[in-house]
Length: 188
Image (cartoon, rainbow, N blue to C red; front, side, top):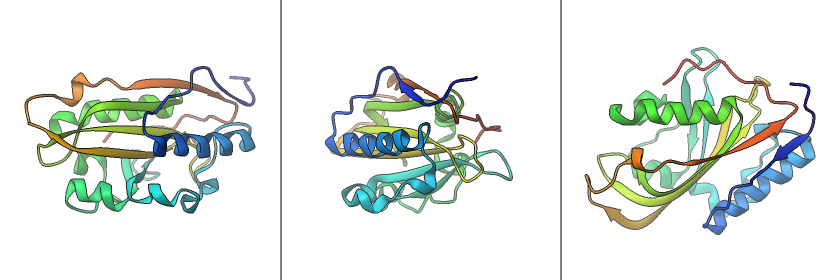
């Protein structure tokens, strides 16, 4: 590697101002850290309007599997249950699991900021319009094993079969950071 500091060639451009505020907070923490910010440096109370839509995904230290560490009440409402503490395989539909894991594995390993807008797949076979931003963080392990994110869903629901998550390719915004240490990820 040999790189020090932080560089984002093309920052994401979320349409939702709440996601822009999340990115601005993350970026300020990254500048202060001169690299990827640590998840411990993030204070969600700085963004109280985002709390219901915030989530944290992490690589579980014991299994190396992706797990939702926590999810705000609006995220849990979409899934009709609390998904905090659950592995991705317990949260996402089997048909979508490999794609979801591949996207977050890429974002953690590069690292990269993940931004998606359009048709967003949600639980119980429902599809809806929305926007998501996921930001790589240094976790408690010292590795880039944590994603801080937020997802906002529109009120409009799309009929099942009209669109599919696989047709909604997110954009990845590579981040160069001197403190990036990729995690070992076993999958879902």
